[in-house]
Structure formats: C-alpha cells, structure tokens
Image (cartoon, rainbow, N blue to C red):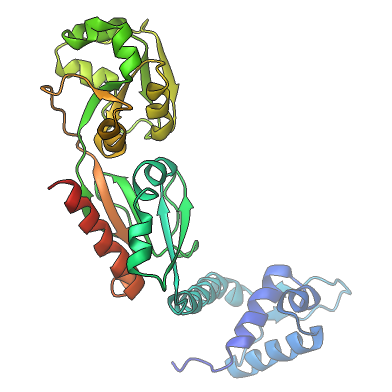
Length: 307
C-alpha cells in the first residue's frame, strides 16, 4: 500500500481526534480550523472512508469512527518516531556541542579536574555536562555520551568498560592521629563512626560496610554509629573533614589519597567491586566525531591512571 504524501493531513487528523475538536487542533498546529478541516477531508477522500461521525445533534465534540479509533495508536506512534527522527538529525548536526551525562560525584572527583585536557585537545568542542544520579533518556535529553557506574548493561546503549574499582576504608590524617588503634587493627573499625555511601541505592553488587566486614568474617552491628550520605563526593569530603571513616571507591578517592587529604587504611586488604565505570552512548552515535574523540580521551585518561 502506497503511503499518502500528505503527512500534514495525518497530523491534523491525530490532533483533531486527540482534542475532539478542529479548533483545538488548529491552535496546537498553529493553523486555522478551516485548514484542519480541509486536511482531514482530503485524507478521508484518499481513504474513501470517513474518519469522524458527522455530528447532526449540535454538539461540538468530534467523534472518531471505530475503524479510525483502531488506527490512532499506530498513527500517534508513527508521528512521534518521525519527530524523534528529525530531532536526531538536527542534534547530529550540532557541530561544536558535546553533551555528557555523569553523576555529580564522578564529575566533581574525576572528570572536572581533567576536562581541561580534553578541551585543550579539542578547542572546537564545547562540553555541556548533564549531572544526574539517575539514568536519563539519551534521545529525549540530547545526550551524546555518558559515564555510568554499574554492571555494564543499559537498554538501548552501547557500553565499553572504562575502569574497575577497588573499595577500601579511608580517613583523614587528623582522625587517624586521634584513633591510633586504626593503624594496626581492622577490628577497631567496628567502634568508629562509619560514613555510609547511599548513592547507588540497594544494588546487590554495591559494596557497603556490611559486605566489607563480611569479607573479614565479621558482622556489622546494627547499633554502630554512622552517617548516611547519598553522594560519593560528599562521603569523601566528610571523611576529609575528620568526621569518621568512609568506605571509599578508588576512582573517586585517588586524588585525595595522593594529596594526603585522606589515608587508605589496611592496603593489604583488597576488595574489587563487581561494578565498574563504563562509557555509554547510543548505537547510532558510534561514529559521531565529537563523541568518538571524547570516548577515546576518556579511555586514554583511565589507561594513564592505571600505568
């Protein structure tokens, strides 16, 4: 069956059916009610069948025929896909703007301290950061590329592992100075103020204090003193400020340890997380030059840190 060339007529019909009014449809489409009526009549002539019951009772509402009602969901979906297709074409032509989605903590502790390297290498590209704790729709939010922490699978996205992560306790030099027992005895952690990272929620693979203690063959008492924070950067800052011991994620804590703001406790105890950092992007964006450049830069930066 040959597709009708008048897509505007389909838009006019869909809007009229949704609003049950030519006038309301006209307001949405920014045309006159007469133009909407003419488009709908043209579509009916092409189909050889009415789309609305012609009202003879004086009521203003349009009533869709049964056959047209069955077709409406497909027409609505098709128009939405056409709109997204055009949006994708438009977004793909946005030379110079790279929209990146990352968590606020990853941005603060890893990406922002390094982003000037990318900008120096790619002066023609403006980086726009979308910082969110929750995954967002790449198409609807004009996202080019992102970094996500998880098991490596996100529906509709290509993922490439960027960095593994080790989990270990950290505290400030001042806190350690006031709690010398921490220097030799991991069991002493049970009596400390522990800072809990709630940023990942209840994911089974996420390493929390209970799992870390379990690795040592211990159980964390439900009466343990502690602080609960839903931002990994804030967790580390709280430890830097001397308020307790945090269970740090190595990717986030590296610079603070190198600078001496934090001290890693018990380096002989290794706990590699099942979760990791991944570069993620849409399959149809795989050859977009600005995305490829940013992805390759991320990989190079991560590689340099590990060697």
